[in-house]
Length: 104
Image (tube, rainbow, N blue to C red; front, top):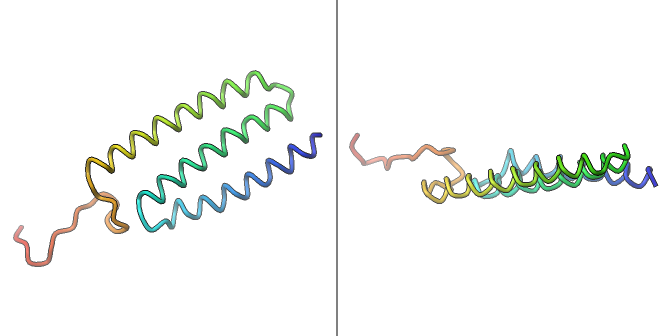
């Protein structure tokens, strides 16, 4: 049974690496935000798997729940930030660009 959890954990780590690529290269801020949220969700599941391997599920469930709640709050906060600033374009990373003909 431990081999099942080890293989599941390795598969999750590979999927997290693929999602990390989207978080770094993603064309828009929404793509990056969703990728970071998916990585946080997979990390929560990975914590439960680690708890199953070490037979300390009760402790790791508490840690996973706290991490999931923190992931949710950070996702909501960053999405509100991007909604407020209306800068969801792939260029700039929060810097608003002026039009070429505009005065300073």
